[in-house]
Image (tube, rainbow, N blue to C red):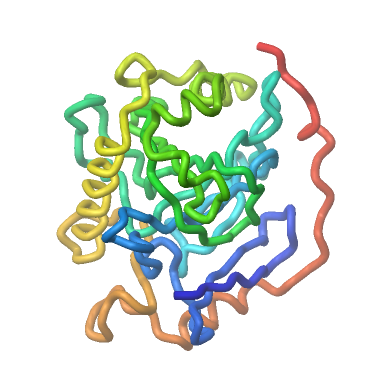
Length: 287
C-alpha cells in the first residue's frame, strides 16, 4: 500500500494541513484508513511521522477534524513549538503515531492507574535517518515507556525503521541500551522536562521510569487497537473525535466520508506562502 501527502494552507501558520491520499488518489484518514500492521506475521507496524528529528514544531494528527490531517498544535491561539532544553535540540527522535490505535480516556490502565489520553499511541523512531513530515514508515517495536502526562496515560513506543541499515541489530529494548548508551536515559529526561519551559510541572512515569520490553509493548499496542475498533464501531464514545473515514467504514455507516465531502474539506485550505518561524524557537533552556 502506497500513500502520498498533500500540503495545504500556508506552512508555519494556523491554516497549514497535511492531507493523505492512497495509491488511487483518494483522500484518506491517517488515523482510521491506514492499517496498523505493515506485516502482521513479522510484527512490523506502520508509523505516521508527525515530527522529524531535531525539529520543534509540535505537529500531530488532527483527531477532531474531518480526514484527520496533520496540523500544528495550537495553544491560546498560537502555534506550539517544543523548547530546546539543553542538551536536547527539538525532538530527539522521529516522532509520530501508529494508525488505528486509540488510548481510551474512559479506560483506567491497570499498570499506570490512569486513563488514556484520547490520542493514537505515540512512537519514537530511533533509526539513523531523519524522516520527512508526514512520511509513512514500517517499524520494528523494541520497547515502551509509560509516561503520565497531567494525570493521563501516554505510552511512548520505542521503534526502529525496519529499512534502517542497523535494524537487524535491534530486536528488543536491551539492544538500544547496549548499542546506543545514554539514549534511553535522554528519552526519559526529554519527556520529563519538555513542558517545564511552559510553566508546567515535570511529567511522571509508571514503573519508576523503566522501559518495558518488546513483548509488553506489542501487547499495549494491540490493546489500543482494540480500543480503536470499539471507537470506529460505535461501541465506545467518540466525544469530539472525528471518526469519519473514506475506506474503512461502509457506505451505510455515518462514519463513511464520501469523495466529494473529502475534496470539499481539502479545498477549504488554499495553498499559501510560508510564514516566518518565531525567533523564540531558537532559544535554549537550561533547567
